[in-house]
Length: 328
Image 1 (cartoon, rainbow, N blue to C red):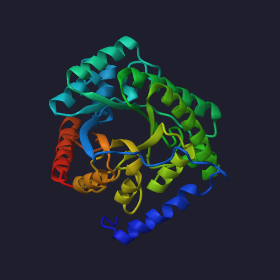
Image 2 (tube, rainbow, N blue to C red; image 1 turned 90 degrees about the vertical axis):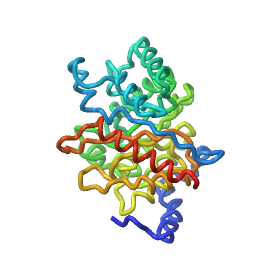
Image 3 (cartoon, one colour; image 1 turned 90 degrees about the horizontal axis):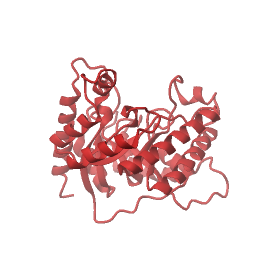
């Protein structure tokens, strides 16, 4: 991995982006909504935690309430570690994928508020790469349901996947080897329908890169451009661009980001290099981003992995990077 690209390399990639994102789009299509998010007053970065970091503990608690941790406990952890927000993944709500009872949502919302936490987002599983339109339609309905959940929680965004889901190993298998343009069209049509629903409730559909259909920043922006809806934007997963220089991809997409997953590594294995937090935060600052930076740690099959320790460690690294770049 080339960790230090030249400025010329980056500018060359940026110059090629318009060609990359336009390729294969319908002739005559007007792009009214696709544009960098208008920011004012410079960057303002607020540390947060994604509940998925505690997947093992949350899963254990769902099976036995005396074990692990629940979403209320995640909120308590975030408060104790001085976070500004918590991102509450939908999988861990009772009854998922159905909407939780309103009484539960109200209780959880008040619990977070009393601890000084905003709820920065939530997310669900969906597969818009599959040739099975019924499955795509089911995903649309699920996201619509959770848009309404997010609105009740006061969360500004719902994360949607741009990649295949089990039992498929990759998007080509899910799509029965349909062309990339065809699959991107399926995805864009589904995401646009979700975004239209999100607009009604004031909730943004945030599309995450996840190492399958979207491996690069250019691919991420190509999909968003095809969706072309102001209520559909990017969720940047910093560990999921599979390129020689993922920092350049992050820089490319950061101006379009409404949410993040800040990973401890630039990849999803123990062999992946540790994230250079200062370099990452510098890129985010340059985009003018104002909002939450949820970290999401992964066990990656590490022996002795303890999310309570790892999350605290990554939070400290993120805070140090935010502080050390504050004069930029």
